[in-house]
Length: 422
Image (cartoon, rainbow, N blue to C red):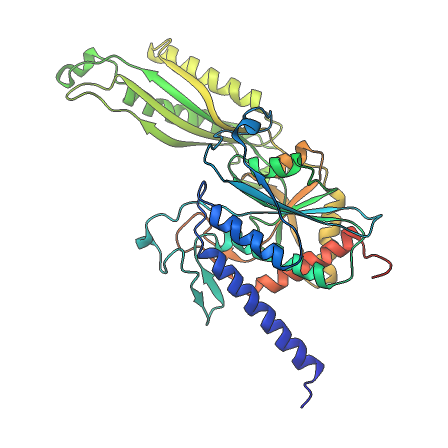
């Protein structure tokens, strides 16, 4: 019995979805929390080899990163860590494209917070949803990238190269993408498969500044606390003062950032103070994360922090007792020149009869800033419909795996061009 073309196509699509679902479930079952990504790197490299390509493992060399001006802290010293890069050579005379995804995940948190165990890769067959840490962020992206590599191995060649990055430390230091680019795995444009659903793409990011604030108090017995200076209480009061100072900047926003109710944010990440027994705390330290859109720049936010410390100290009679240092991530707002890339993204969606894509800014962060530093136009798009990244019950709709893979393949053909002999 010969099946009709429509039945054959349907069965082929089902088989493809099944393979992709199984691969995503397998990747979710491999915990890859930051600094513990060795197993996922090995598994993805093995899969790449089965597709007929040679993965380049790029070590996260602490000495090399420490010396690089674009590297961010903290710089890990854990041995054996590596990002992966692959270049699929085109036939020539076509622009190249980089596809960037990340292998690491945030911690799962308490397993009791999850409906299904976080590393089970549980598939709800009725809803077509897969659950687990990294399901949406970003192992669905990794699965799509690997599926795209498989398509490129079986379809007519493209004119331009397609470069793949499977990196560590996305959304934190960005050092994995930095190392891939420094090792020559650059391209004329880049798409990061991370952070959006099918109707949304990101073309720019706000700036970010992380800092520590320290308060020097004076100890005293808790029975005569008024004779001391309680560093913990002062720090708590200052945290509210700094938050108010940063949020006041939201009173005047420029387009397109006025679409957000509060793009200027100051988040208290930690407050630390412990007094000796029955004693007012003498020292306190807090960690703060500030988000800011343009036209504000890092120097503007640094000046705001210094001014807030100075004015708060004067008002409280605490001159010299409050200091701060930058001790973590910092980045200017980023916006690469991605107009041609955006046009190609919209054209591809229209050709595939997908809903229009809203290309707009984000107050989050990604490795777009590294592509910008290398003058490579970049957008974030994909991996598709999912929920709760970084939270319990993270999940992803499996039907988006073949749909988004088809989109990326069509986009690569549109951007890189199809070779004449193909």
